[in-house]
Image (cartoon, rainbow, N blue to C red; front, side, top):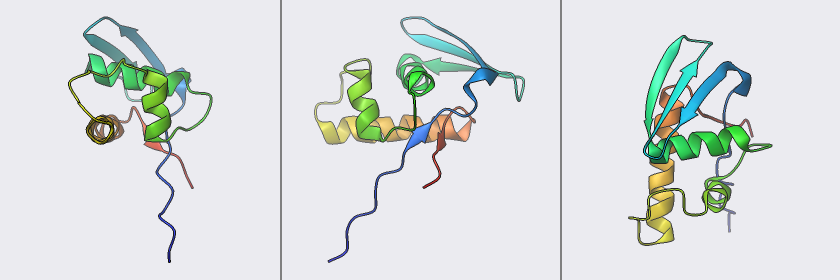
Length: 103
């Protein structure tokens, strides 16, 4: 029987390149490497800040534990919360604010 692959680990790239400001419902991020400014939802901002503050790459499950309720409570179960988190991580990756750690 084959073992399931380890879940991807996520991190924020070169954290010193970002300037950010977070409010209750929004987060604005300036990326000095690209000169882009991004307006993030409250949930995406919470995930981004958790990645910035993490001492190393984190699995989605570790990020959920670190966020401990900062992601919108609308998701009723762990699977839905994990799916929502993966959508947010993929969106952050698409705009250069998160990346998957090399395995």
